[in-house]
Image 1: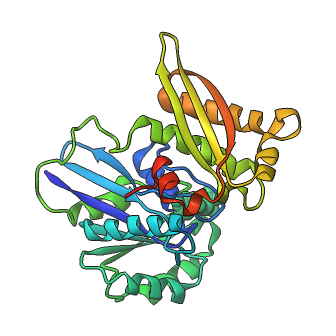
Image 2 (image 1 turned 180 degrees about the vertical axis):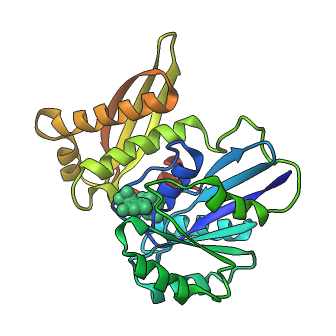
Length: 290
Ligand code: GDP
Ligand code: K
Ligand code: MG
């Protein structure tokens, strides 16, 4: 049995969360076209007959500007420390030199697999040139080109990664898919809808707190607070006659129902907590503690 930790690193929007979902065949990590959507390290456990891989999605690597950012980068650091294999993911259409510097800067002590993503948007010559550019880079033990959106297959993608893992007993029960509680995924699905539907900087000022999660006979009742900095942001999120919060709620409920495989009653409240992103107590309450 092979078992170990495979951690995904890369710049914001490289497609880390999309890849994690493709590998798991299930939506565990939220995805958006906005940078800094992922704030936590998410562990996803894939168990098969002869291997168990614990994948970690991480926030994109950035320079911290708020305490929230510092917590995000701490989770990148911890993911560097416990990896058996590092997946270094980049958009093949992004700047190669910048990614080269970033990956060198990680100072990997474990084998790295360079993953060139979004090949659906690149001409074949560009993919070949990228492979040539990254061949023999010290962090890239192997190079693969994929489209995370289209999906990845076992033979071309997972098999070589499994080969790099140590022999050993599985770390988690075979029926576990994550180390994080259900509530976490529920709050993330709500947050994803805010990234999709709210304009400009509002998603970055938002946290979601599940206040009630009750499994009843025929449905799950969920009450959540959407936390923002300012009264004006609250007004925008409520929208005209409550239209915005209603849209967020409807879209989130559908995804939560798919995730829980149960009917859901979802109620959302918008609350103002000035400067929560720089307040240790709030950060802890909203799940960004260490
Ligand atoms: P992360 O910030 O690295 O976690 O990136 P996400 O997984 O959130 O993806 C960022 C954006 O890139 C989203 O709009 C995705 O739909 C898109 N994306 C991810 N993988 C691919 C891909 O293989 N091809 C294309 N065309 N878009 C992708
Ligand atoms: K993103
Ligand atoms: Mg992400």
